[in-house]
Length: 114
Image (cartoon, rainbow, N blue to C red):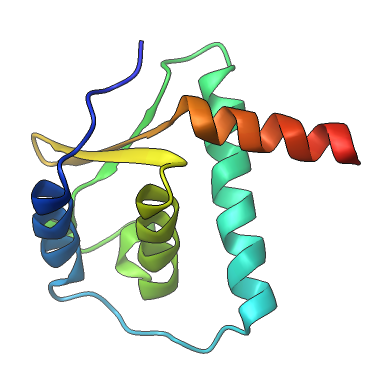
C-alpha cells in the first residue's frame, strides 16, 4: 500500500522545517547531484522490495543529525518528491520516505534499457 499524496502546501511546510538549522554544503557538480538522486531512488526501490517495511523512517529535522542535515541530500529528496518519484511524510518526529509506483516504473525502465 502506498502513502496518501502529500499536498503541495504540506510538502512546502515539510521542506521549510527540514531547511531549518541544516548544514550547508553545496559543492557538488551537476553529475554528482544526478548520481546522488539516482542512488537515493535505487535505495528506496531496493528497500521497497526488501524483507522489511515498504518505506524508511529517518530522524526528523529537529534531531539535527542523520542524512537530512546535509543540504545536498535534502535537496535530492525534495527533487525526487517534486518529480513524483517518492513520497515524503513527517510522522511523529521521523521523516517517512516511500517510492511511488511512478518511481518504480522509472527504475525498472532504466534497468530494461541497460
